[in-house]
Image (cartoon, rainbow, N blue to C red; front, side, top):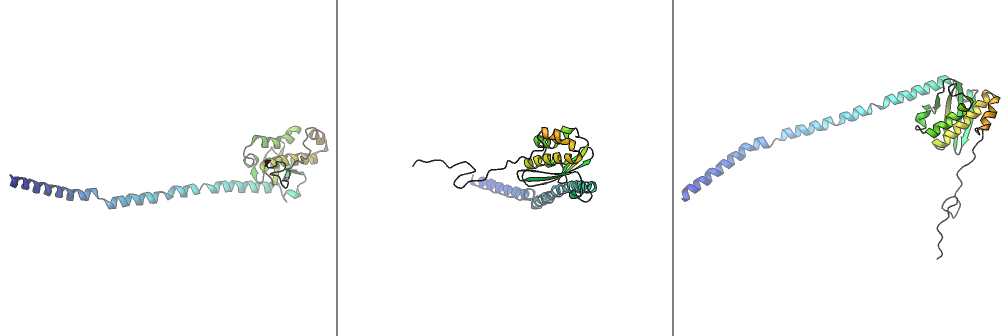
Length: 207
């Protein structure tokens, strides 16, 4: 009985060894895995290169708008006749009016884009022209700096109202009635020594 059992075990071990040897070439495939990993590495940079090529058209549009403004304003802002300066908080805006279709360009950008589509800030720009019925009669060119977008929008409104006085002195009464010629002098109050802010005091402690 011992002899047949030994024969069986030897045959089984030989079979398992042969199957192990036969399976090794099919299971281990280093070249295939390396080729796949290299393929994925070479494919990943391609979308990055394609996305980087989107920026130039926007730069061209802004450059074209700048050329358009310079062609409409020969000699720059200072050489124009219908001009007004508006201020609000720390913002200063120089405004030039020219006969046109109602375009508003701020710092060589469209007003809606520059003011981020904020409805209240855009309304500030339209009120002076709308009061006199000139919504589509004049193009507005603005150079603004300082402060935030809200302060710049209100400074532009005052600048447009002052420029409309250069068109005709008869515009003063309706603009004054709407309060568009009044310079809003409110600014942030300075911080005081010993206080947290302008008026906020530190918490009182009895002990």
